[in-house]
Length: 97
Figure 1: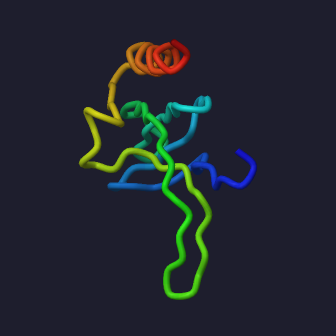
Figure 2 (figure 1 turned 180 degrees about the vertical axis):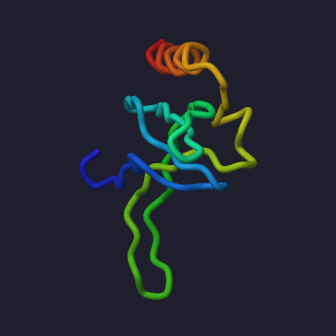
């Protein structure tokens, strides 16, 4: 994954802050924060966006997280860390089969 722009360790979206807890080649696990309070966890199956040029600016191949409309297929939200970790591990196992 030398020339691939990797996902962010921290970001803000939909009024929440997200912090990466764990990742592997295919999956990321984030905690979802409202201020300093953990309100949930998200598991994302990583995908790649192709390299592109837009208005003369080049963008590298980039890892993508699930967008809002991708949840249920490429992203999952959990209130429990244990359930989120179970999903995270199940995606990794499926990728290795």
